[in-house]
Amino acid sequence: MARMAVSFRPLPVITSVQLHPMDRWLACRLAETIAPARIRLELWNGWASPSVESPIGVLVVRDRRALIGLIVDPDLYFGECYMSQRVEILGDLEGVMRGLSGLRRPSQPSWRQKFALWATPSNGFVSARRNVHHHYDLGNDFYATWLDPELVYTCAYYPRRDASLEEAQATKLDLVCRKLRLRPGERVVEAGCGWGALSLHMARHYGVGVTAFNISHEQIQYARGRASREGLDGRVTFVEDDYRNITGQFDAFVSVGMLEHVGRRNYMALGRVLRRSLRPDTGRGLLHFIGRDHPRLLNAWIRRRIFPGAYPPTIAEVMASVLEPADLSVIDVENLRLHYARTLEHWRGRFEAAHDAVRQRFGEAFYRAWRLYLAGSEAAFATGWMQLFQVVFAPAGGRVADLGRPARRPRSAPTV
Image 1 (tube, rainbow, N blue to C red):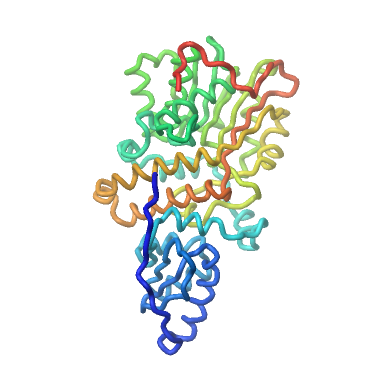
Image 2: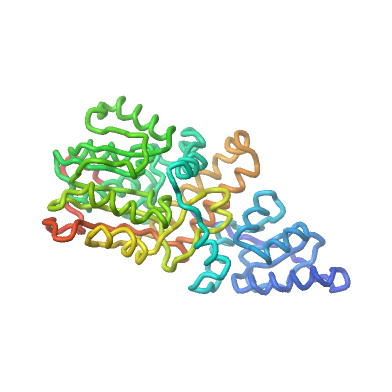
């Protein structure tokens, strides 16, 4: 998506007499913080920070309470104020978010973030279902307006820079299957199956039987209907239940985009599910998840408005709390964060193109919240503030040859 050149009207630097001393102090502090990102600050009364060379955008703060919020707790109040139009962005929103994401940040969390990490409640059976309902049960038609026709709501894999979203998502589904080296007749369990695209892809193109778990009622109903229409309901079983209730043994375990919703306190429980679900000799698994380089909670506003209960783990946390206690060996790790930045660019473009329909159904505040979420996420992956990991693993001592290197496509697999 090409970016348009943005020009800004010249803004006067108002003298200190025209601004309350406290407002001036707060404004100067905020302006100094965002200046390295080439973002200029403007206040409700026309005051503007000194000119920033080649600015990428202007942050407009429309009242004193918004200014205080941006100083006291920017992670929360930037999103809150943008939703309510008390903060506005002049210029390309994603470009400004990328500039803010690129600002130097401490590698270690602050005392407030450490306390929040410690105090974060467990995603129990009830709260997990409530959190999933908050995000994923907004209506299948809502997601259909800006996702690909398969309704794949996870990072795509781009074989070329100019690949379409549809092509990239098909490539991602196939990449997951090939990393797992699926063979006809095998049994696969998927945890957190979304609208069913991967489960149906595995059954159709790789000849495996799939049992897929999900606690989103709307997604499960959609997936069951699609499996029936496509004649795959005998090979794919969609179960509306929590991943912790998975029983039986399988040749492969796969989870794409669910680990972020498990919660740190449930990692060992997930590890026990993995261990008992995989055949000890030939079993293997793949976890595809949003992650971090350092332990840190998801942005406070994102947790409040978009993804309640979500936590993006580090590789070390997954190793120490999920895989190692379950005696599972890591075979391969790949970071796809730039693929996710591109995916989000495609999603954001389609979402913004559907702005009238979204506003009419959900209101202006909802539209602005989701637009900010998509633009901010794109910027976070582009700058490395967030990561996207694929981890392939197997029971220690298992007999899985060449696992981690994608197998060749079967003849029935899509060519991209």
